[in-house]
Each structure stands twice: as C-alpha cells, then as structure tokens.
Length: 59
Image 1: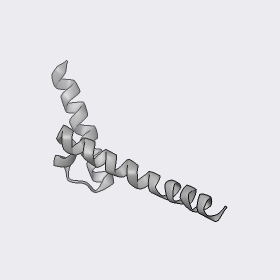
Image 2: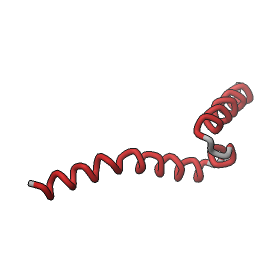
Image 3: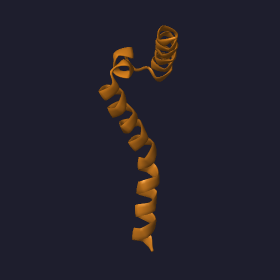
Image 4: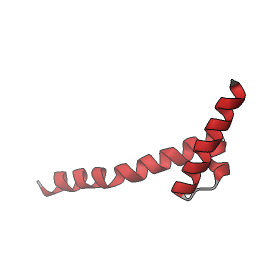
C-alpha cells in the first residue's frame, strides 16, 4: 500500500512540476516545496495587499 501511495504522489508531483514549470526536485523536497508554495501564496496575495494599502492612503 505504501508503494502505491508513493508512486501516486510521484505522479502528481511530476504533473504539477510540469504544469508550474518548476524543477521536480523543488516539489520532492519537503522544505523546498514549503518555501515554493509560500512564495506562490505571497505573490498571489501581494496585489490585494497593495490595493488595500492604496485605498487607505487615498481616503
């Protein structure tokens, strides 16, 4: 059972790596994966935060 889960996880990590154009090694290593996902989340949040700050400055 553990082998099947590992191969399934590997399949999805490989597909995600290709879709995001990120080296597979980044997604396979837990610490690198955590840092990468944190960076992606921060990048997605940045425009909202800037917009909120600008709205406060303008009022």
